[in-house]
Length: 477
Image (cartoon, rainbow, N blue to C red; front, side, top):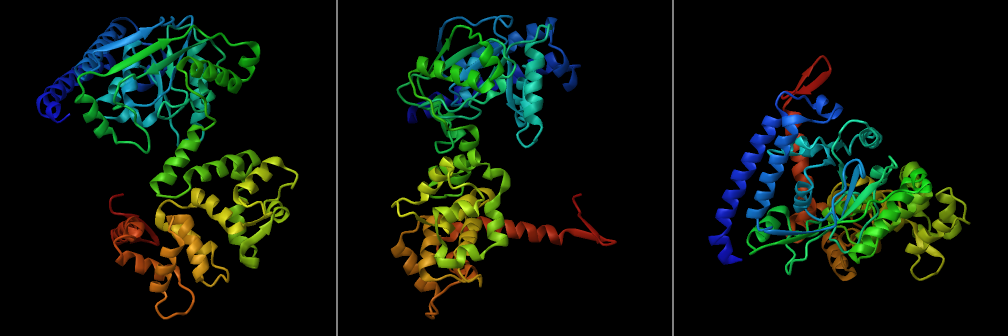
């Protein structure tokens, strides 16, 4: 790798940049005179489509200089008439753009933000993509409608290509397919991707190497391999047409069997929660995901009853040290005690099968995901939940629990921290006291560093405000 970094990498990077610039110029020419609205209303034809094929050829050359000298293709790509939708999995890397190029640049379903990326945004726009705006509550329905309109249209639209997992995984399994591509009920062609390299330098997941490191590792290999397998066109049954989730699940099992890997019930939303938990350095992240999945089945994610309990009925968590039975647990969540999913949720916290759990631990796990945005807010929330008297102070035993569930701090270390903060021996500490202590300790300062930066930005923004007639706005506005 060291030798290739010095000898080969500079030439590969230079060639890639030149080819990327060439592809971008061709895409600009091909899109010249077309508005975004026109791109969404009708397919490109004539010389514009020929130019698109030329762009794909240049991009294939780009991957060639990147080390992907040979791509093994099994099966044959179906026509848009036979299979309007291409379902590609597993999605594990940004190098999955290579199969897109080899398929002739079909219309990809992609995040809306990608259309504004330098250089790549123009190339993506040339495929006439279906954009998904994940922050827009209506985006899902709009995306499904656009896919249905294209796949059932008499116009010569390119095939719609979708990565149904919705996120990058490590290719060890297929997570739950999002049903968007299956709503039209049209035939689809499953496409399996493999990267059979001795050293995996392509997998891009939330807990692996970053994008630039993966790019460096890949470009310093002698060559990288990719395999694309086109499965026979899958024609849905009448039952599958009526049930897109069943359709998606059956296709997923077929692809998993071909790939020789299992399926997993994790979804894109689960991965997003896992990413948030990992970013906040939360312990027991997988446990939080399991709790959230059960809450979704119970409809608790819509009611947010746990937040109401914390704000409107704090006495519930202060009585008997927060210890409650299963019947009380069901009553607090306003669900029947006979509900089997609720029993599963309770058992996650009743590890010793005593029939009693600490309700505060449950509330903390739920509210961490929904309310906290960083580690500091997580710790502050824990101090609030474990505050028995509602007076802004917690005991040594509760401090130990709060720090264990938020920072994975062992009891012995938590005891040492408590004694150092409570130097006068009062028997309790406050959140502000812990924060002041942690900021002075290098091993804990990271917890509040980001919060301090955010507070500083907020203060600077207030200083830049102009106040007129009781209203205010920032000078930048």
